[in-house]
Image (tube, rainbow, N blue to C red; front, side, top):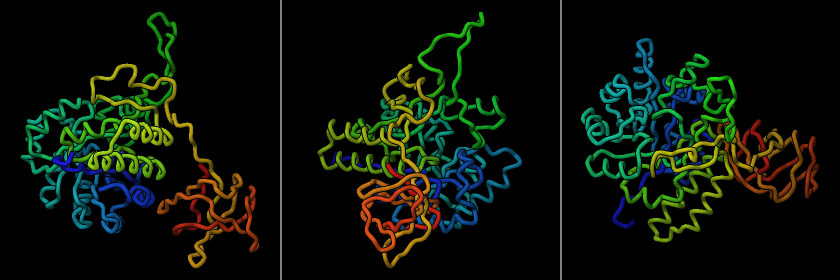
Length: 398
């Protein structure tokens, strides 16, 4: 591995809490604003607040990539100009785009351009075409095999980015029309309702309902390549991309940490099958729909789908416990009202909000100046915290 360049690890985030969760492990983050995003629900970063958000990313030593990857129809061209102008002023490190209208605007603004997987680049000539338009990096189609990625990398000088973990779409490179057809909300404009994760029944021409392994007939398993990180590095992939802009901070922290450790182990020469199995077990403890290797080793069959479960297959669910009422920096403590359940010394807890992510054990509990071993539902207690938390942050037990 010593002759290979260490790949960048890039995480998808939606707010400062997600940034805080993955910052110790990631090299870069990608995100979107409230305009022209394929994640329309991720609206916590506005154009007005983009500069401050990018500054926080840079302050943590990470690169900031702005996704501008939804369909841009005639009425949205003005939005495209507004987003690119804001991106240039904010100093983003690159814009992720596929629509030529956005690419041309980004190039004119002097911004680095990464071509989105929405462009469905599947060969080196297409990669070179976009390089000719000024693209520095191509996010390849998710439908490529590892052998095909290796071949493309050999034949082009443009940087190659590939997804290594996260949700897989049932449609080619995410170009899905099912949501628009069923509910009139276009996934290509960022409003996907995820009907592929619904329960469906299969009917024959004679009206008989066919038996199947489950009812989530269109639900693809999540991609997980933690057991194949050495092969990904050997193929020359420049950037490992994790999907998950709508996932919670604990997911981002766990996934970023596992892939960071895997990458470092490869370059230290101590990556092993046993370590990979441990990391995969950790990854299975956070939100997932079951795991597959996607198209990396061939076109997936039934093993690439999860008909039994449409959503979270993880058996570990965080349980709401309470809410932060106040934070006392001098005492490094928070007042917590236990709304849903009690907590005790030694519990693994997460405190999170739109700008907060903290994972720790319960080290001490106080009530009326008296130390407690446990506190029950309905009580207000003082909880020692290892970092700043904020009023109205939620407290969860793992």
